[in-house]
Every structure is written in structure tokens, then in C-alpha cells.
Length: 493
Image (cartoon, helix red, strand yellow):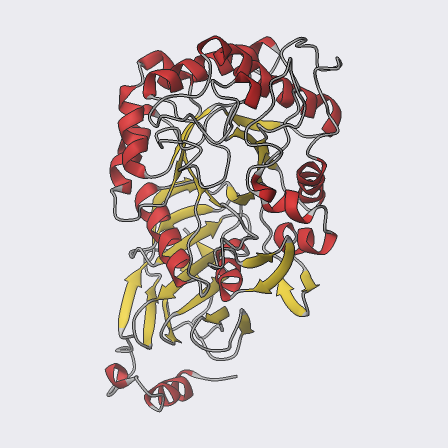
């Protein structure tokens, strides 16, 4: 076991440790230090997750992939040994597409949108609302549904049903990619209640027949975007202005209540970024805001003010989910920064990846690549996500980390503190001040750590032999562009 003196001697010998030169007993410090403050409690963490469309449709029920994404064991996948991410939240997409004909009408474009982005809907026509009638096909969309069951069987316990577009036959132009003129809703005016009933019926059927209780039902997705067949990026989508969104929220609430699902929440608004979400929220009347159980938002414009949306949500007593995000950085440092910013300034209680398996026209967007509807490479981004997802667990309390590139969570039952830190600059020692906790393990105790270097070769490597508590402080070396997790036991608030 390394003692304090040998650790300090070792630090001075490491390149880049000039800031530690001349350290003596009681004066040890890092190049940079942050204070972890347990008195600033950000609330209980609900978890991590992903949407299932479109990748689950493309791949189908793959047990090993489900183990990697939703389990927490060690998995052999694609010739690699992977740590299971342990995601516990699943967003299930109610599709808008179909190949049937209704009185000569067919979906446009037929028969598909963009391959795996076409999700087959359950309601075939408007002739009968009874889910046991021939107007419904509950065998549709088997791949996505089977993956949802696999996620549940591996520990996922929060499920959300969401819609990118109403069913094609409810639309003005029969095209679930959007209306021909932007900034115009494609949903026929007389079908708002029908769209809400469609979603509520799926939620009730899932409760009765699938062993799935959707905690929430989201009737729109990025509604402020000008969805058209030309600009819709080959996917389902539908524009709704704030008044139309409010109408759908109220209709969905009524339809859920009518089916005995009063406990099912309606989130709003799953906007593309924070500014649109805030603008739309402020245009809702008080009754609509009251009907909303949670604010969902996507993090695609990272330069905008997360704190303003949080302030509005807090004033209304609504929690926030960061319900969709992806980026083209295969290394993972961009997503590390986004997670840190979302948790520090948005105060999100859950964080969900969009396509956990994805390859967007040659750009690497997914932690695991999708190539010709088959699993491809596992990118470094996967291991960066493991740093957060495996250690910041549901039920832990998110506390103030002192810096946007550091996330801290405390588990009272196990007296464990977890810290995940990302270093975006050159190599340096980062220190952590735990002096605001009443008890911190034992002076000289070794700290468990897991390390991923996006610029090097280390991928979620575990060590327990070189990072030591000095009273209520510790520090560790971070290579440039690296992420590291620490777990400290015996911690009391």
C-alpha cells in the first residue's frame, strides 16, 4: 500500500506536476481543486435512458445488446468486453406509418420514409375505437416492443410513450414527415382528440397486455420545428404552435383519465432546445401548465440558457428531463460536457440519449454504430457514458460539485459518494475538497477510481492503488481529454 510520502514523491516525478513542487505536510494541492457541497441538494436522480426508435426496429431483439445497454454486468459484444451501462429509462415511439389503404388513400411516401425511421403504427383507421377491433393491429412494431421487454427484464423501470407524428391518416397530406408548407400543423383540426385517444389506448393496452406501465405519455416531439417532407430529415414529425400544443395536452389528459390512467403524466414539450421550450411554456395558460407533469427538453443548442428554463420549471414546481441528445463526437468529450452542463444549470433529474445505437449518414453519432442495420463499432463515447451511467444511480442525491465539468451524487443508504469529472484541457491534477461532509472514510484510505482516456487507449479501467484520501481531500492525475469516476465510502452528510 502506498503511503502519503510515497504518493507525494510519485506526484513530483510525473510530467506536468510542476504545480505540486515543494509540497509539504498539510499543504498538498492539485493544479485545480473543486469543492463538493452536500448542503446544495439538487434532488433525487431518476436515471439514464434512451429512445428505442429507430435502432430497436432496425436491429430487433438482441439479448447481448440488451445486456450491454440495460444490464450492469460485463458483456462480450462485437469482440469487445463491455461494462453494461445499466440504463433504466426507456422511451417508446408510437409510430405514425402504415402500408394499408383507406378508401383509396395511402401513406405518402409509400411504402417507407427512410428505412428504419419508419415506425409502423397500431391504429389502422378511424372506423372503430375498440382496441380489440380490426381497426387495430397489435402485432405491429414487434422489434421495438421486444427490445422494450428485454430492457424491462434487465432492470429498466421507467417507461415513456412518445409520438413524433400522429397516424398518417389523421394528417392533411397523408405524409407523416410533415406538411408541405412549414409552420403549419399537419394534423387535421378534427383529429386532435383522435390522436390523444390513439396514444391513451396504446398506454392502456400496454398496461393490460404487455406488463408495461408508461409513467408518461408525450403527444408531440420538437413541435416548434417546421416539419415538411423536404426538411423533415427523412423521419416522422409534425409542427404544432403553442396553442395547438396546449390543446393536445388537455385532450391527452382527458383521454388518459377516461381510461383509468389518471396517474400517467403528460410531459411538455420535448422541444429541440431550451429557448423554444421556455418560449412555449410561457405561452401556456395556467390550466395547461397545471396539466403538465414534467418538462422534457432536448439539448441540441448548448449555447442557450439552461438556467432560465430551470427557473421557470422550479417556479411551477415541475421537474425537468433532458429527454434527447446526440452529437457527432465519437470520442465522447462533447457529451461529457453536455451532461455536466445539463446537471449543473438545467438541474435535470434524468438524462436520455437519442439513438444509443446510430450512424447518421457516415457521421458517428451513436456510442455503438449502426451500419446497414447491423451493429458496428463500439466508440469511446460508450465508455464515457459508462463513467456516468454506472455510478450516478437512480435514487442518489445530486449535490453541488462546484464546477460544470464535475458531477457529484450521494447515496445515503450506503454512505457512498460518487464523483465523475471530465478534463477538457491539457493533462493536470484535479483535486476534490470534501471538507463540507461531516465524515469522510479514514485518512489514508484508498479511493476506487475508473478511468477513460479519449485520446489514449484506457477504456473504463479500474484502479485502487494510487489515489489516497488526505483528511477530507484527494486528487488524481487526468490526461488531456479524459473522464474519471471516483467512489468514496464511509461518507456522512
